[in-house]
Image (cartoon, rainbow, N blue to C red):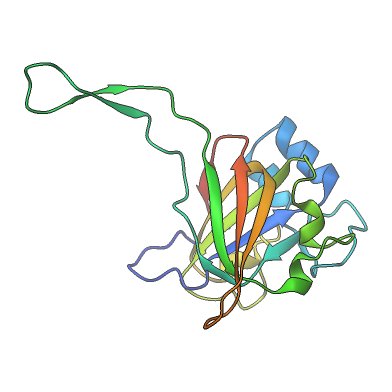
Length: 193
């Protein structure tokens, strides 16, 4: 299928993390579209152990709000004496960190083997995929086998670490959490299936 070609809300956008260390190592060594998509061939339920080198990944669900995706601008405003407006020069952009706002489901984020909570603060690099989707893929969220190709989509990949989770208790609404992901590479994409 092609990239998204019409105006619409990204209601079915998805964030996933590759847990297959073999595929992650290959993508870090050679960051290519094929290696990134190979990381997302087989979806695992949260809490399921990685069993074989088949691009096993887990979706990060219950997301309320996604941050902006992509490389931040490397523009610096410089005030100039005597001018009414500042000048802009190219500067060094810092690697961004992302804060994902989500509805908190404690069982999804428990600090136990094979759950997403065990990946927070472990110091390891993972491959992340953000899929921009206007419709839900009928055959799942695996990308290496082209299943996202059932709907128009744009996929972005990066290497990063899950650094922190902060739970925000709510007295009148659902409990929320903020997951912080640091970006350790460039953003790759947009690609499609």
